[in-house]
Amino acid sequence: MVNRGIRGATTVTRNDEAEILRETVLLLREMVERNDIIAEDICSVWITMTTDLDATFPARAIREIEGWELVPLMCATEIPVKGSLPKCIRLMVQVNTDKSQREIRHVYLNEAQKLRPDLSESK
Image 1 (cartoon, one colour):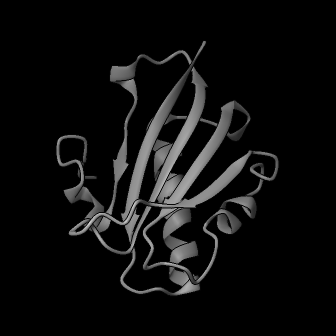
Image 2: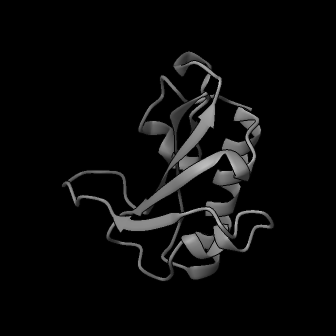
Image 3: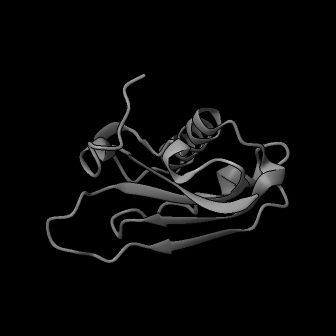
């Protein structure tokens, strides 16, 4: 078993606590589903948001998911590069898995699909 990173990103339409929490959970659930992982296999989750989002900590939403209470979570802000995608939430889930790099399914939702169209899948 090795440790792999699973990337994910999504966007919100406004700096709103409920929307940030909801979209964070939707993104994480999609990452879990596409990669067939369970919380017990997670090493940690790194969460970033763009500087235009400050209504809440997105980790709050993940901590409330049953079975995820003990998963180490860390929030930070993205580097504010001019012209970068606004209102964006990113996750880096580090998971212990037998899957190869090519088998990992990264998830980009909403406007974040523009970040990596080569890795974005339509469902």
